[in-house]
Image 1 (cartoon, rainbow, N blue to C red):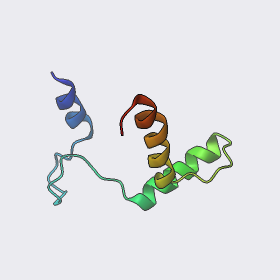
Image 2 (cartoon, rainbow, N blue to C red):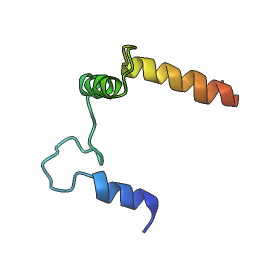
Image 3 (cartoon, helix red, strand yellow):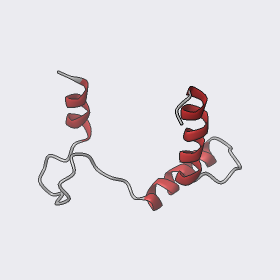
Image 4 (spheres, rainbow, N blue to C red):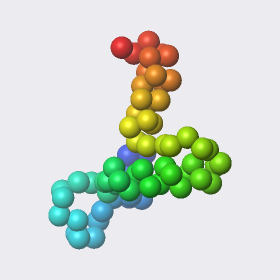
Length: 69
């Protein structure tokens, strides 16, 4: 079985209760920020983590550092 099919089998919405037409569940920005705050608390990180901050961190540490404009 291919990796993509394994991911869809594990996380896909297959029971027909989701009317969005998406293959995978989507977490809201608000819920994602709550998860990040929980991770920060468990990791003793005092900085305020948000999805916005994480996207900038990804952009600077992964893409720009690897020559992606």
